[in-house]
Image 1 (cartoon, rainbow, N blue to C red):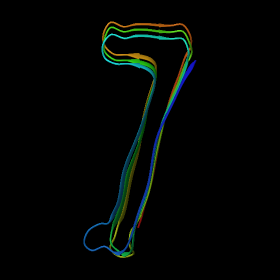
Image 2 (image 1 turned 60 degrees about the vertical axis):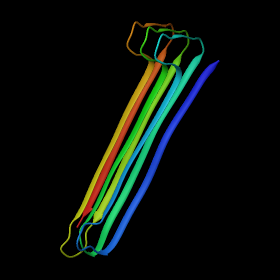
Image 3 (image 1 turned 120 degrees about the vertical axis):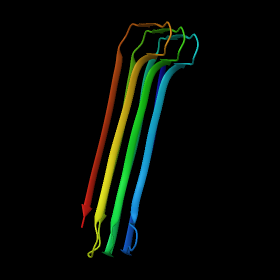
Image 4 (image 1 turned 180 degrees about the vertical axis):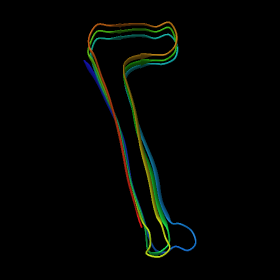
Length: 178
């Protein structure tokens, strides 16, 4: 048999703010998003584990986070658009915690972890005595493991391929306009 595990966490947000005049204070369009997907084929908890696998394991974990924001003052006033997008993924074929573990794998383990974080913000100030400020950050962290074991006396035997791929991407684009 084959173990197929797919985990996907996706968050999307758009925030916009338009004002005629902003006195006092600075209107802001702020957004913070985090997505984290975790997928594991076979897992043993803390203690002494004895795991044997003779079937295929296919693991996919994908984290996706998209933030977009905009702030505009049409006549007078300052604006701010700020955003942070975080996309993380953890993918494990076989995972055991702390203990004296005995793990044997006699089949192919195929693991793919992906994270994609995108932040796009813009801020436009009014035509009189004003400034526009845009901030953006995007972060992505991906961990991918074929066979992972915690602390202790561990014995791991693997007789076939471990195909492991971790792909993290992060993109931030900000456009302040006065």
